[in-house]
Image (cartoon, rainbow, N blue to C red; front, top):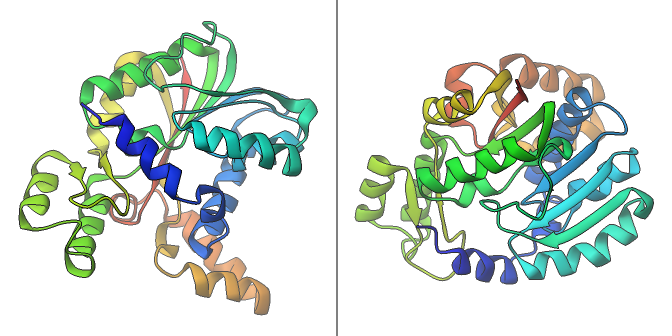
Length: 274
């Protein structure tokens, strides 16, 4: 079972709001905002589940979406109450609460036009917890509601753990690598850094969603070919807009390639409740 207290403790120490100010976070944010705007109708009611301090909630509220924010971390929800008021449109913020992604009983069935699931699938470690989370998301979505779910594919996750073993050996060793390779589950050996989570086999996630009744619309890498080059891409945006546009076009046009999707950081699933 997932040690949820370890997750809470990790986010008590980590500045999640500022993560999206890094080059990596900014590129991901820009791409995901474009995806959300393309797939979710203006004025829709959205649950930002696992949305942390509310960076997406704030930005989407400014675009006129009616936002509900939920996160496991009380500390992040406290941050959200300050940050979202400062950076969002408070008239479109409907709630900001502490909630467990596997139990959304606080929300009524078929109450949301869309759910953003950009966090829980990084952390839930068992198939049962993941299925409980997805079942709850399905329940709260209206008929034909939209799910936008971000996850870490197994190969990308395994690569990140290899990097930990090389550069931060206190966090991962040979046994860790073997366990992640076999199960997809990562448990940090040290109190610093990302604590634990599951790197999903894409076929497994697609099966869970299909069995629930979701209709897949899109499956793609988020940063794609840009993964690992984010700082240079942001600099290019400021200095050479023509080249930047060409690079972003390449990222978008290759993001669904299986080799890119599985090995380039976060991936995103967009589907509709059938």
